[in-house]
Image 1 (tube, rainbow, N blue to C red):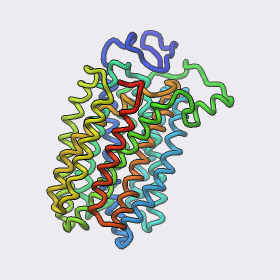
Image 2: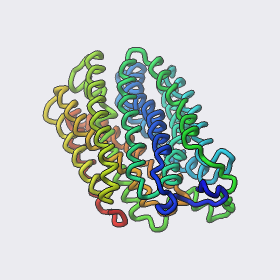
Image 3: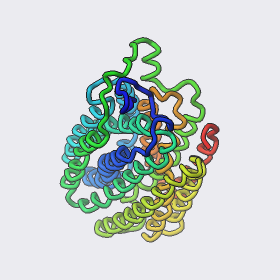
Image 4: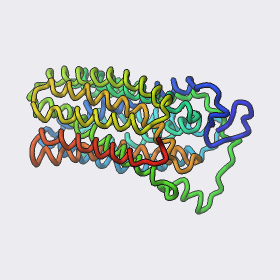
Length: 421
């Protein structure tokens, strides 16, 4: 990226030597941006989309959610790589990342309203997949900002700001969406307004310098392989981080993806009761995650360790996941929210810092971080698919130990990373 002292000189990433102060303005942009795209996504995916699916096909809603999640994963996987690579290669007076984030925010806002008014299940699935395309137009370039603009010594602190925004947005989005379970289109519209604002807020705060002085990549076989394929060299720890995150995310979404149905079908709550408990669970997860995120981000920079916080986080998620297995009372989901919120807060605070430190090539940061972000998308698919499989074969109570085991497997994979302390 360019330096403020000499805009014509570009570096792939910031260094401790050149960045003397923590880039808090970038941190605020990451915090607000993550909340503005993450909140609407989570509120839609966990609350309004299942409610919309149940409205269209109440007898096959669990299977449809699994199909929709799988379809969305394929689309998101391709979109992450494509738009991450395109943003790495973008040369414009507005920078590499901002133009994509703005366009993605506009398209995503439009598609949320299309999803809200889907008249049939096939239309719902297709429109949700198109929504995923635009969502990843935001995410892949957005994550590249961290690698571009934050030096290693500040990554724990700044990525914890990103995680804080993601946490607040995620659970606030669920709380907001829960208020519109009986008026679904209105809920989607409210979320779309927040998404629309994301790109403009991020562009204003990051003030990304022009990327026109940045050397242009020569179009040849090596460039295509570097920018449009999976990493193939010096990437053992990169893939351990990817699959570790994949399993931890699967643990989260095995339960979160079916939270509404757990409350209505397993714990026998009516719509009012389900809405009430979704709000309580979301608030529990939000406040515990907020507090832990802030503390963990500072601590991980001080102790110079990324793996220890991830191990403790995964263990908390595993413990919380097992609790509802022992009782079908709603309080067990509240207890899950407290434990899982603590674990997810710690994990999210360290996650992006860990990801950046295992990148095989900083010049393809957005594309490689986009691939790592597929672990989020993949986890959002594997979690619900595992849940649907075990719900159909055994019953709702079976998905809780499955989620716990996924978290422990993810912890083991992350602890096998050698290049990060």
